[in-house]
Amino acid sequence: MTGQTSRPRLLTLSAPTFTALERATDELATRLESLGDTGFTELPELPDAQVPVGSLRRAIAAGTAAEAARRLRKRDPRRVFTGGPGTRTSRVFLFSGVGDQYPRLGAGLYRRLPEFRRELDRCFGFLAAEHDLDLRAVLFPPETSAGPGDGRPDLAALFDQRETTQEIHRTVVAQPLMFTLQYALARALGTLGAQPSAVAGYSVGEYAAACVAGVFPLEDALRLVTRRAQLVDELPTGAMLAVVAGPGAVAPYVGGQVSLAALNGPEQSVLSGPVEAIEKTARRLTAAGVACRRLATSHAFHSTMTEPVTGPLEELLSTLPLRPPDIPVLSNVTGTWLREEEATSPAYWARHLSRTIRFADGVAELWRLADPLLVELGPGQTLSRLALQHPSRPADAAAPVVQTLPGQFESRTEQELLLAAVGQLWTAGLEIDWHGLRQE
Image 1 (tube, helix red, strand yellow):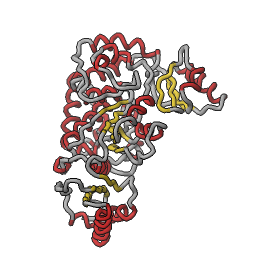
Image 2 (image 1 turned 135 degrees about the vertical axis):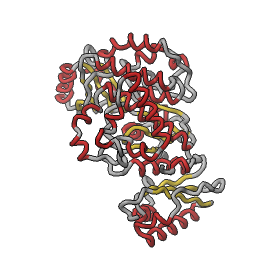
Image 3 (image 1 turned 90 degrees about the vertical axis):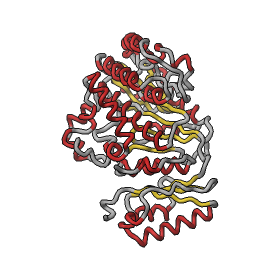
Image 4 (image 1 turned 30 degrees about the vertical axis):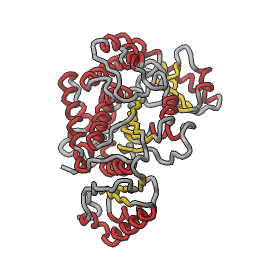
């Protein structure tokens, strides 16, 4: 097996002291350098689960032995993770909204992570049977359904599959699809030993977060998210505008047909409303020297335009059993922790769609947790970057982010990214079920 065809590997080290860990790292780098790109065949596929209590830990994921050696020599903390038991005591799962999805997202995990595949198939089957919604065909187009690939974004395929690419961004498809992907990934990480201690979502991502926290049973959550998307799809088209300004600066532009859709950071806001009103607002902002750009969306989410949906949504929600969350959930509506009476209120979830997303306020709450480790379940690091840019971030929070899925134009495969994520969680003190990573 050559380095070009070998599977990515997760390498782990442990030692009682930092000096010993550094020495072991150099020794492993030397060994890998001597073996070359074929060296992975001579190393154990799974890490050694026996780690002495109190040991320091180090982990690295790489596609070839030579690449692993280079990274070990460099010790870049973004690629080589170091820590120990109790390093991070709060694991926050972040569930993104829609907009960053692309065809074949999750394909590599589908092939190589059994629990992810089981949960994804379960959701696919339910949505196909109850809603006549074939997400599998959209996510894994027919020409790749026999082998979805390794999860590395295929740019040529994206250009060849324009219809699929357009379909995956339709509201009625995108919202249940992103819910399903992130729910399945959360369950898969849980079986490996990575359970969240808190969850936060962005827009429809809050529904996935609440489902993982036990507020909604899975099938009820799928019904709710799918019906929510259908109702929105029936609304008149609208537009959304990202603005590089805080709430005070955008306040003069809010009112009438224009709503404040989201507060993503101290200087990051989103406006929402009818297309003509948003275009006029964009011209006014540009004339005032305020940077802004239209978002790729067909509807004015989190605006007064979505208020007609709240009645039908509340009617559906009143038929569903809503439970208090088993773990803390951050609320987009309030920007703080979801209260029991909100979690169990049909009115709360119904009005969620038309209220401002107070994500920046929620991030401030996250940074008040003890040693938070942010685990992003959507593609890329959209929510993590917002969190890292927030002024409430502690100065010593050097690299508290775990990425689990590649963005559309990233070069790393999903398998390598997953191994890196698991290695980072292990160095943060989690005990991992290594055999759950065995490829089938």
